[in-house]
Length: 460
Image 1 (cartoon, rainbow, N blue to C red):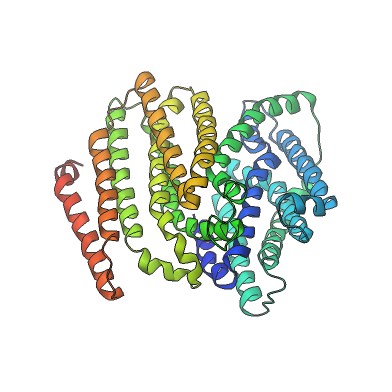
Image 2 (cartoon, one colour):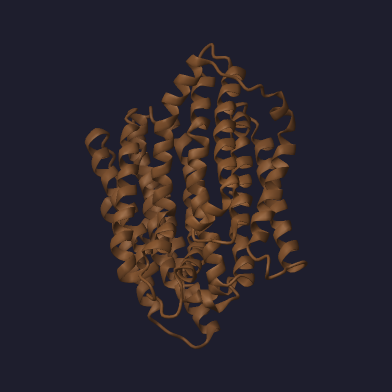
């Protein structure tokens, strides 16, 4: 969570130094990288966990085979991108910037070469070392961004500074894992290799579908936004505004991911309890309340939070923030609902739902972007995660019924959304009065929630 939070605080710096059009190029390329990283790893992290933990398994041999596969794929793709950098730059609409492709190819190569060593740390239960490496990387990255942009900034170099900072920070991973990488011996065992590939490729496909849900909107805006939809502004400009304002959804996404990391072990540990289903329903209910608090607090305070982006050109896209926060709320509830297929070993339903979500992402963006631009894309996120949530709930009630508080959870979400809409319709010239009003509304919201839930709190 700490690295993600650090990355969130980099975006005010980036939006200060880069205009929306240039930031749009960065957003677009990083979205492509996020999708390609799934192909680079090819699901081998999960395969390594699965086969290295089998009774009697040779962990070192499994590590060597998994590392060989990932290193080979990474080298093949990165070298191809570097040798044909100009062609790929033209394909990605960044002609004359083949250097961007080179930087990103090297970044992806290092990222994925150390992915199996990071998995090994998790397997060997070394969370402190894992955290130190990750946090050190983001501290170095942040320091380099500050140095490049505030000390030696040259507008001619532009967003190359961000790519170079990422590359240098990632290069430290090679130092951190020096002993692991030098002890690795490229290996090929036909049986292990075949089993791993057979196990890994569905994981990779599911990962691609998940990344489609997460990043496709940013890729689609570049290509599906009608010409001159925003008068006098390019699609890259619109994508820059969208990408910057999208960052505010991280505030909900961090809460969702943190809960997911703590929640999954909890659900499995409680599964055998005879009251576990009632407990799961309560957990989801309180999760919805907390997410509604985040949704309200962020959405009605955008008039203050917008100053994180000191370039006012980005402010025009702030209307996408509430729907994106709502979408991630639905995603969090979906993760809670997935407990049914994890406990019944019907995980293939997760793959089906995720792929269905990817198809809906493409369809909704295709329909809504030409009509409403990036605002339509933000609502596509809401509709996709709502559909996944509802679909998972319906299937779950068939195979593993859990008495979720659907009515009260829905009323909290609907009530919070209506409150946000009403408050944001009130236009006050004084920022101080506006902040005071918003604080009063949040306090009133908490008081109402306590009044409704106090009996439940006391029983807990």
